[in-house]
Each structure stands twice: as C-alpha cells, then as structure tokens.
Image (cartoon, rainbow, N blue to C red):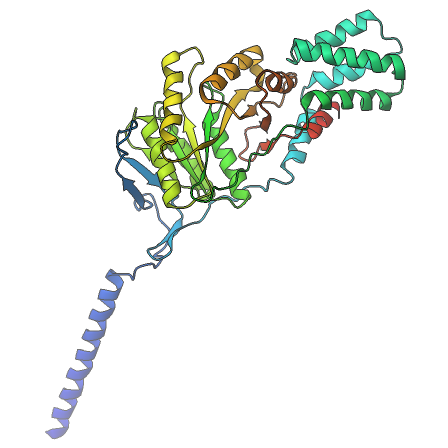
Length: 395
C-alpha cells in the first residue's frame, strides 16, 4: 500500500513540474524581450514610424511622419539600426563606367569637330560648319565664337593634318571652355551642430525625385548619414517614390500622409529630424514647377525661408534635362534668381548631341555642373569631371 502511495505522489509531482514549465515557456513566447529581433517584417508588420507635431512657424501644417526602411532592428538603447536592402556602387569608378557609355552615345560634338579639323584644307566653309556644329550642340553663341577663334589661331600656327595633333588641340580648347577650375564638390561636410541641408529643385518631368534617390545612394556609398524630406506634396505618390529609394539604401524619409500638405512644413520637420538624429545630410525634394508660374516660384522661396529657421540651406541643386537646350537655360536663370542655385545636375546626357549645354549653363549662371545622369539605372549618376567629360566626347 505504501508503495502505491509513493508512486501516486511521484506522478503528481511530475505532472506539476511539467505544468509549471509549460506555463513559463508560454509566457516567454508571448512577450519577447525588448531589443530582440523577432524575424523579418512582411506587409502586415510595417516598420516603426516616428510622428511629431508640425512646427508652429510660417510652415504650420499637418503632422509629418519619419518613415524608416522596412529592414532593421529596433533597439531602445541604441536607436534604429537601418540595414539597406541594396548596396550602391562606390563613387570611385562610376565616372569611368559612364564615360565609356557617353563615348558610345550619339555625341556629334566631338566626332564632328574632329572630322572637320582633320581635313587637308580648312577654308571658310569648313569654319562655318564647325560653328554650326557647336551651335547645334547648345554650346551658346559666345563660347562658340571663342572656341572658333582659338581653333583658327592654332590651326594657322600648328597646322591640322596630324590626327593626334588635331585631337590634342581640340581637347585643350574644350577643357578650357568646360573650366576644370570650378568647385564641383557635391559631398558636403556636416556642421558642428547641425546637418548640411541640400534642396533639389527643377521643373516638371526632369527627374528630381529619381535624382535625389540616386544621389542618396552616392552619399551612402561615401558613408554619410542621410535623411530625405518629401516636400513634393502635390504629385501623387511622390513621397512614396522617395521613400522607396530610401528603403533600398537604408535612408529614412520624412513625409506627410496628407495629399497637398504644406511642403514648407514637411521640409521643416525633415531638418528638425536631421538635427535631432545628428545626421550628416538632409536632402529636400520639392514639387516640379514651371519657371513662369510666379506663385509656385514664391512657394519655393518660402520653403527655403522656413528651413532657415532651423538651419542654413547649404546647397541648391537644379536638375535639368540635357535635351531641352535653350529652354533649360531659361529655367536655370529663373530658378537661380529665386533660390540661389549653387550646382547643376544634368540628366539624360547619354544619347544626345547636346553636350555643349554644360558650357552654356555654366557661362550663364557662373554655377558648376556637379553631377551627370547617363541612364535609368540606380547607379547611373556620377560626379562631373571636366577632363573626363571632354575625353569622352573625343574618344
């Protein structure tokens, strides 16, 4: 009898231990410890967002949201660690790759000039053709006359029959026009107490949002911490497009969830977030606008003024379509008057004979071309280099 009682007690004890253990692991499974990554997110498990009140300034408006990329680990002690889903190409080497593409493109400027200058006899008809080639390449009247005069003088002194001599002569004169002495630095340094702020402006359809996404990739490749500000609040899905670019390289985007929100308010919030998070660079996307619409241009000035309540606007990049020719020059002039453009990004420079637009824009504004786009790929944006550009034209 005593043996049966002992057996019953042992069985009860075993059951009790199993029950307590099961309850313990059930509780542990329902409540994961803070800072622990519980697996990849899916469409039903969105990335965390940070919501802050809109500033009580000229830009007062709806609440802005900081959207972090969907990949990452949230740790309250260390903040959000952003893990890019796509690693951008390093800046070094991009220009060489794009130079090869430009050399293969339909650039009649260099090829046409070399053909004309290599003739046994260069008479007035040939000089007229050279002048026409330069004008068709959007070089501009004044630079064209300068280049023709310089070439005339050198041909008179040096002759023009040797192909290498012609190539070297033309290269030297074109480089002078493109001006390698201009400051083309586009990778800014953070201020001691705040980030460097870049505004990106331009008319509809030139690819501003895409350019910002590509530039974010360039900056991330240079180990810069970046925040994007989606101040294009009028174009449908513009903010989502920008956030998608940010997701790919682990860059957060500050945006409004309300269509038509005050763009200056979103820009203000982006800069505020950049200061709070001590990032290196804040890039602000702006809505496309026609240069002859006074109200829209005034709004662009307002965005800049509101940002300057928190920080300086260190760079204003104007995105231009290289194929627009004289119209692009008009755009550049008006935008420069409103927001003091400091640099040019030329898109669609591949497959065009309009390479002379580089010289024309720089001459008109006194502002350097800093970046060029030669394709639709995510890494088809490269720093502009005067000598490499001319070599590509003459290759």
